Image 1 (cartoon, rainbow, N blue to C red):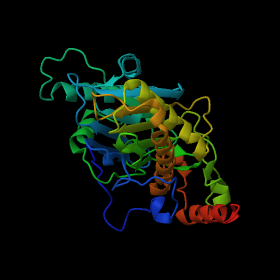
Image 2 (image 1 turned 45 degrees about the vertical axis):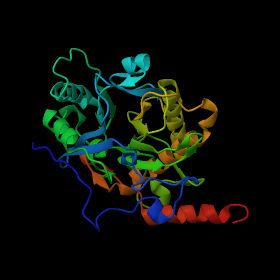
Image 3 (image 1 turned 90 degrees about the vertical axis):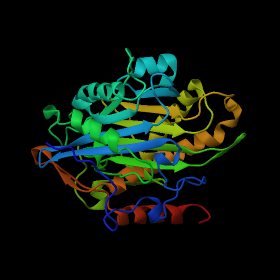
Image 4 (image 1 turned 90 degrees about the horizontal axis):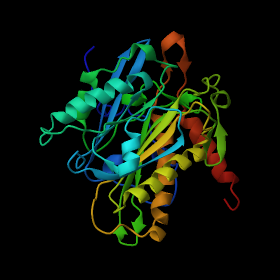
Length: 357
């Protein structure tokens, strides 16, 4: 099967994002694209692998331009629930550094993806003498909608995602590693958002990208919404074998310990969306910085950044749902998309019911 790089949908075909509906999470301004690529030096690429009706999978690459085995960037990781395969975790935790792109994919394809990432890295300029490398690959179980045992993601798909990675707008929903994922009873996928908080030493940008595939009941501005209440069918089976992978990037000057604190807030943010943190859901966040060296921001000044991460993750999950489309997959199972008009109606009711509204 040929690799299928997935750029932004053509104008007029993209579904509306949360902000397009007037759903504003938190007071902090976004970057120009409201995406993880608003952080300078961060690019994203997708390869979508589809063979309807049985295969709906892919790979997503988050590429920090400065990261490499000779000049790793500071990083931290937090495990909310460790039922997952986040390759490279132990060295990342031990050294507090990231030396490769972060790749996201399907559970049983994670090991092939890691091998392909190593091969791609060893061919990079300056890596001719590299004899040790720590690939970082996360996964979600897309077996509800895709034939996961087929392990459809191959080396050519990984290389296509890495080579096509770019800045600017990021395709969301049923693309790349989000092609077959399900969250909160609805079809989900990839979502992203950003914020530009002010810290003591000046402004910064923080961006997040989520691969949403977890159980629970969707909450937006305090209101719950299920497929049944939305009139689009019964809820999808609980994503007990799911996971949620969150990647956070920032140009704030932080050390590895502080980035671990940032990653922790990213996982906490899932609770705002209604996440159940079930037994089989691997909930992870990786946070990396793009500015190494120099004195880090004082811990006492990190409050605005923490709040920005919470808000951005919540919005990214909503974007992953809003961008996704109803999908019929493996075994004839169908998972409905989240209707934007019903989400907007629920958000409007929540606003009207607030005291003083």
